[in-house]
Image 1 (tube, rainbow, N blue to C red):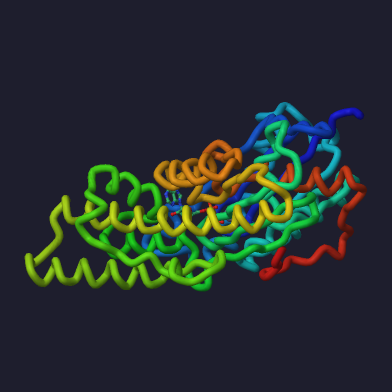
Image 2: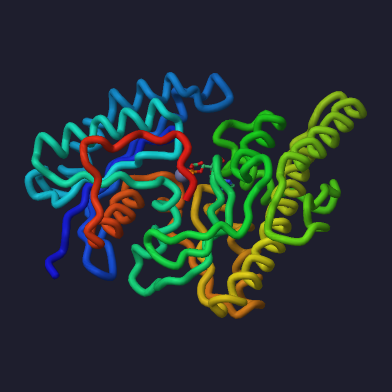
Length: 345
Ligand code: KG4
Ligand code: ZN
């Protein structure tokens, strides 16, 4: 069939993003992908401020859309459908995106597709031709942490996940604790590269319990204790202390993720056999974590795949692709599409 041009819009957290994809039955070609981040706007607050985020999305959605269309050299009239994140996420941002997409779709007479942000992450590895259902997905971001058995574009089974913080959140809190900038993941990773992961033995929460559930909030507490002891003993933190703490933290997260992934693979394989483990979400950008997962995959007979880094963090292309996976099945939304702050897969 003729390729379709899909516009994807994302505004559920702190990135305002738009992308144009040329989609065929088995692959998507990214014609453009624009992401307007908000890190600078939230920098003084130590986290994303929902009010500020919502306002920035509302102000920028039209610019980012125009930038994506013009970079793709495509007019709105040529677009076949408008896909937008309809949840889960910060309600103000999701609402801004949904309202903007409705206006765009209605104004141009185009079909509208409401997309689940998590489905966007989970289906993104299929942008590359060749990844077929069923596969196992580890979604690890600032807000999410779960294992999904993905058996179709609409068919996800949760095999386990975090019972408290998401790993990205833990990376961000660790950075904050050590005086590193936000979002913390990349900074912690950079520090960890010159650190000794064995100097501070941190716990491996929930490894003693069966199943694929995880916990990361205890790590943060242990890390704070180690930091406070150093500060008391030395009057402050040296550069090497910071690097060693980051290395210990990262090794603990990678260790927990690797062992829980191994268990999720066993559960998945008992039903479907070993196929592919795909990883997505911002934390999947972490090289040490990727290597740990690759290693488990090699040992269990799974193939390992991770989208390129710019597709791991929030972007419009993942929403366009997940929208296309719905659209080609004949699914679309209408003007009653609601913004859903909570929307489990
Ligand atoms: O998927 P994402 O862009 O947004 C959502 O949370 O949906 O993920 C952002 C998270 C942040 O917590 C950030 O610190 C983390 O991903 N992150 C990383 C790395 N790069 C980003 N965590 C660990 N290592 C990294 N290199
Ligand atoms: Zn995300």
